[in-house]
Each structure stands twice: as structure tokens, then as C-alpha cells.
Image (cartoon, rainbow, N blue to C red; front, side, top):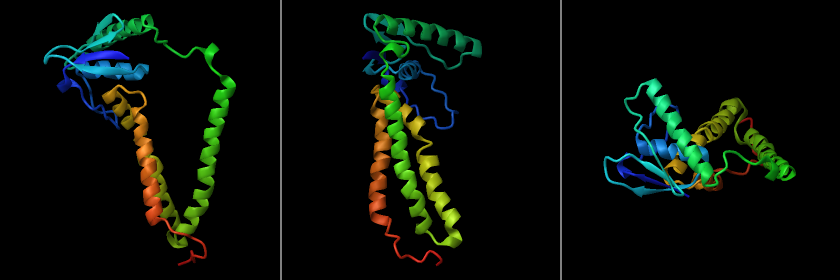
Length: 204
């Protein structure tokens, strides 16, 4: 993996669900760039006040502080840093994109089909179960509320939380802990509070 040398106090937890926060420290700039490039990394403490550097193989790329820069300066520094980092990653053997010749297209299509199949296995029973779970007089609201909390809120936060987890650890797979924990929570909550709906009078 790449190595980021940075002052730990300048490395933020980059959780930004609505796109309003700005992560401007040199550490945040470096770790965000590596995360977006899909490159694993480790963070090594550096003296306070020093700019973060990214070591890829034998090449060191110095990050920059984005705070206080004009839009033009920010673009110029971002392009320069991004270009240097891309060159260093390419020299170290990190591909800029997937090699189409090495993609197992039938296998990829099968995996996508399998994921869709799993979704249908969930959506079929859940629709029937939710219909029977609530009385008809409040059915629409009672079905809509848990459905949209689960899919809209817990699911909607997935990209922001997973990105923050990966950027904070440098582990590309660390973001999977969020859906895993949510899935385990649903098992516990469902096991404790969801009841059998057979022979329930749904008009009451």
C-alpha cells in the first residue's frame, strides 16, 4: 500500500452526507485522493506543522493545504497534485482503470444477475409481510415510514459513511462494516419485535 506521512491532528473523519463540509488539510487532501483512486494506504505520524506526503514506491508526492486558496489556486494545486500522484501510482503499477481484456464479462454479468435475484428474494416477501403487519386504516403510512427509514436514511448514508471509513483507515474494505452492522441490527430487531401475521385481523 501507499504510505501517507502526516500530522495525525490534521487528519479528519471525512463524513459529509450533504456535501457542505470542506476538508482542506494536506492530510485530508491526500487521503481523499487515494481513496477516490482506490489505493490502500497507511498513515504514518509526521511532525506537527509539516505538509502531508504520499510515498508510492520510491516516489514522494507532497500534498497541499487547501484552506484560504482562491478557486483558481485550488484548481491549479489540485491538478498539479493529482497529476503527480497519478504518475507515481502508474509508475508503481497501479492501473488508472480496469483492463477490459482481463475482465470476466460472463462472470460479471452472472454476479450482477445474482445480486438482483437476491433483491427479488427480499422484495417479494417483504411486500406481503408489510401489508399484513399493519391495520388497513393506517397501512400506507405504517408501510411507508419503516421502508423509507430503512432504504432512504440507512441506505442513503451508505456512500458517505463508507467513504469516511475507508478514508480514515486506508483499508478499501473497511466501509463494508457499515452495511454488515446494519444487517446484524435488522436481525436483532426483527427477531425481537416482528411477529407472526397469520390469522391476524388486518381490519382492526
